[in-house]
Image (cartoon, rainbow, N blue to C red):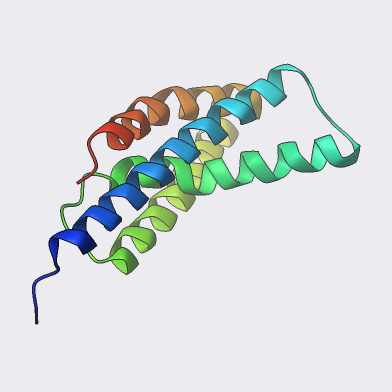
Length: 125
């Protein structure tokens, strides 16, 4: 097994920073579209896509950003796994407590994830 070159590590760090920043923006856009109550038509489709993309990838990338020099496949597997698990746990909490407010849960998950995503955008491992 060979060691990755400095150029490869730089490209990987740049890519991780870009993904972290993109997901942080997606989370904020999802919350903004939710606050504006955008629904129907193309704007509603964009809201749905951005929200689902953030919920499936945002919390996971916030956790996966702490991996040091892990292969990209491991990072993406952890990202999707944590994202799906977080979304399922949030839904289970809402169902169990009879507090069905997906809007608030989106705001809570965004508030928890975005600071870590911004950290990873500045300090990529």
